[in-house]
Image 1: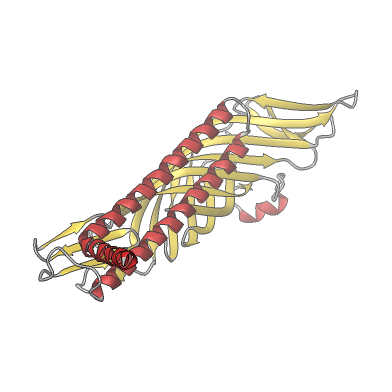
Image 2 (image 1 turned 180 degrees about the vertical axis):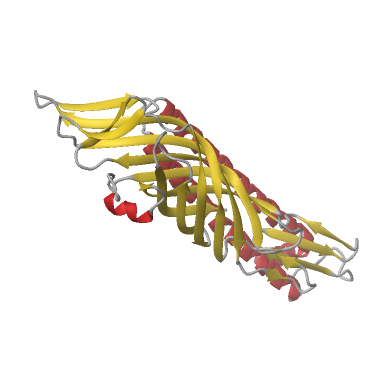
Length: 352
């Protein structure tokens, strides 16, 4: 008898709890969870970058190591957001199905109520109030974390075939770029054309061939043979640049049943063309060799090496979703009084 009573109590309690589930409230809970997930992951990424910058400032790690660690942290938290938000999206789909099957009540069953979920954009239509509420909306301007790397070299007299006779190693001369961009749609409504702009820091490295190093004589920078056998001869210049591109994003948009178009980005083929301008923050030459006592010597030379402080040029990229091919070319000479111009080819990641 007691067992039967317990079963009846449990059954009635279950019914009571299921009846208390209201569609609008459940949607609100899921929306808040998505907001919390995004906020927590972004805060965690900020803390990691702060720690990396601290270690870099204390010389515990190199700038190259800091750059790689920041990229790994950004990729990790972007993936966490994707996985955890996807789980909430699945719950929302189940909730909509339960509503369709009559398993969950609405505020007023006579009122028309619907919901759409597209790429973290939750749009609620409330029949009672006859107005649309946006938990999140389709932004005209979005932001991206940008990381790029590749090979770095120079052209003489704007001639591409001069690479064949370059005095710098092609595969051993690298560049790294780390930055933050904003992407603004030109039109108010969904379209394919955007203006992309932001701030980047670049580390350009040039490794000389044939045991040469850079020497400044009478205001002219030349490559000359070193008296020692060099195991490393690298010229690195750091830049702060402001990139600007026209971007054509051919991602397929979503169209709602009522005719409204949701603008999707970074979900298909993208093409950007534009340029940049900026300033050199510093230049160093790294030389490594063995002295007469067979002791390994690492020599760091600081100076401007007669480089132009201001730099500007052209850049373009062709990408699919968040990854693409990237090319940059300086329009002004690398060294004053020369026709040597920097060129970079590589891979670019735009984390939306």
